[in-house]
Image (cartoon, rainbow, N blue to C red):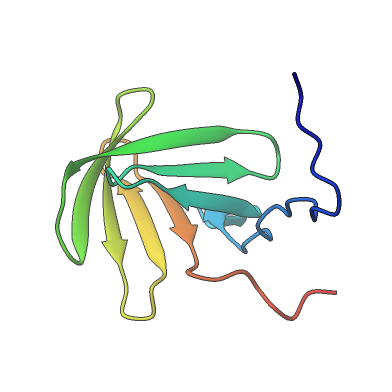
Length: 102
């Protein structure tokens, strides 16, 4: 039996952030789980989950869904940079979405 919620507001997706992959701007959304994992969904449809291997601050080590190791650095303002030392890939995720967009 399905439940119908009358008057309930539709859920809103988080706004896109001004992220970058290897210095190429691509909007993304990130979500964080209580176990320390991070999921990044890119506006082009790609997504990846990064599981926490070694927690630290400002540096942590995470493993992506394909087995790659990433070093995540959290900067003072809350922005994060993920670096894969094996292939030099770099992901930038700002703390907050850009608020000046129309």
